[in-house]
Length: 202
Ligand SMILES: Cc1cc2nc3c(=O)[nH]c(=O)nc-3n(C[C@H](O)[C@H](O)[C@H](O)COP(=O)(O)O)c2cc1C
Image (cartoon, rainbow, N blue to C red; front, side, top):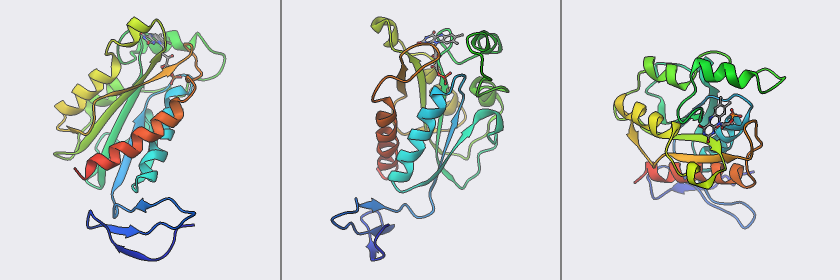
């Protein structure tokens, strides 16, 4: 439960004072964050939800939306857009790699329609929208993990649409093709969400 007493904060937005038992949370007015994700086995979805929790920790209202049902015309009510996909064959998933993924599991894939690659082809953003990109990828071999894959392409795609990058693209690691995420990745994703919000005011 947040305390009721408020004063103007350093950003000019209402600022809720902390108490001994409540971490300080700065409300960013009615700023809204949107996380659009593509996911086959659920790992990228978990990261999207953790980033969204971080945006909320940072003071935004925020939603995570699967790319197949995400809007392609991003409204001017959105202040921060984050887009993520898994790495498939060094890049964003394609129809063929999604079909390949479906053969690796007995449960339905999370994303069954278009992916981030197709979304970027038809998306429109308000001018100057603040954006960030992330991907999920295998955690080994180490040399390969360092290559930039899907997130770099997403980042470029968002910039081409007029987005303004808040932080460099981020990567989150899975133990194996179908997951799970490496230990600590959920916490790291949530912290990245908080960091993104803090950069909005810079
Ligand atoms: C067809 C296919 C190709 C993949 N190619 C790569 C790759 O090139 N590099 C990599 O690090 N991981 C690769 N992976 C692993 C995925 O990145 C991993 O399955 C994904 O990040 C897990 O997220 P998800 O559960 O949300 O789909 C591939 C996975 C599949 C199914």
